[in-house]
View 1 (cartoon, rainbow, N blue to C red):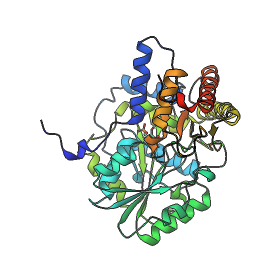
View 2: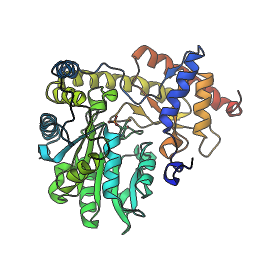
View 3: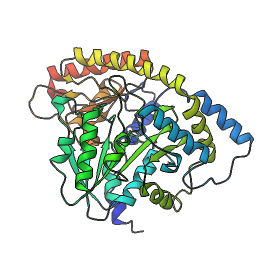
View 4: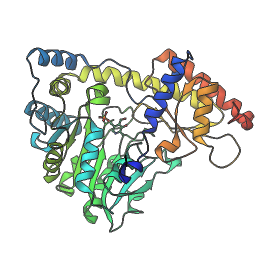
Length: 399
Ligand code: PLP
C-alpha cells in the first residue's frame, strides 16, 4: 500500500520514542529513572475526578456541541480572564481533544501551502510535523543560549518576511522552561499586527511558573484584533494528560473556523473529560498551587545538581518542569546529544530526551516531574556519568 508523501515526511514523536525505550528496558528488568517524561506524576485534581464520576452516572454520554459544552467554555473563559487578565468570553473558546489536536487544527486553518511559519527555537517536538502537515515551511526564530533562550520579539523580527502567515511561539517553553516577559509579548503582538500575520501562542504551561509571571498575548488583543490565538490545556495544569482536554482561545473568526474543522475530525472532545475539566477550572486552584510549590522545589533540587556538575550548564528555568542543560565534554563544538542520551540510559540508568528532538543539538532535556527521592538519585547518577564522560570523552559511544 502506498502511503502519502505527507505522512512519509513525518517522523515519530521523539519523546514517545524515549518512553517506549524506557518501557522496553524495564521489561528486561533494568531499573531506569525516567527524566524523559512530559507529564506530571501527581494525581488528577479531585474536583475533576468527582465531576467525571457524576457525569458518567448522569449518562452524559452523547456528543456535545462541536466547540464544547457551554459549561466548559464558560469555565475556561472565566479562568483565563481571572488568571491572565484577558477579556476572553465563552464564544471565543473551543475545547478539543488536547492542545496538540487544537494546534494541528489551528495550523490547518491558518496556513496556505507554501507559507512560512516562524517558530521559536528550540521548539516543542510536534511543531515541525504539524507545520509540514499544514503545507507550511518552518522558519526557526532562534533563542539565545546565553539569555536562557528567553523568547524575544527581536528573534522573530529577524526572520519574518512577506511569506510568513503565522508566528508560532511557546511560553513557558518546552524544552527550555523560559518564560516570555511582558514587554516582549507586547512587542511581539505589535510586530505581528504590523506585518498582518497571525500570532499563535502555545501556553499549555501557563500555570507552571515559578519566577515572574505568564503573560498571555490576549491581554494585548486590542493591538491585533482577531489576529491572536492561544492554546492551553487541562493536561499540565490539572495533571490530566490522559483525559485529552485542551482549549483554544481566539477572539474573532479563528475559533469558529477551528470548530468547523473539528466538526469533521473528532466532532468534540470526550463529554466526560469536558465535565471533569469544567470542574477543575472552577475548583482546582488550591491543588494546583500545591503542585506548583512541589515542582518549584524539585526544580531547585535538580538545578543544584546541574550547577555543581562539571560538563552541564543551564539557566534556571522560570517555568514548566523541564531543564535544558548544555552538555560540554570539553572537546569543542556541540556534543552529539543523541549519543549522550543513549549513553546515559545504558550507563547511568537515566532517560533524557536529546536536544535534536527540539531542533538543537548539544543539549538534553531533563524532566523533573519525578518523585523527590528518585529525582535526587537520578540527578546524582546523571551528573556522575557526565563528569566521567568529560574526564574521558572517548567513552561516548562505547558500550
Ligand atoms: N504543547 C506543548 C509545548 C507541550 O509540551 C505539550 C505536551 O507535551 C502539548 C502542547 C500537548 O498538550 P496536550 O496534552 O493538551 O495535547
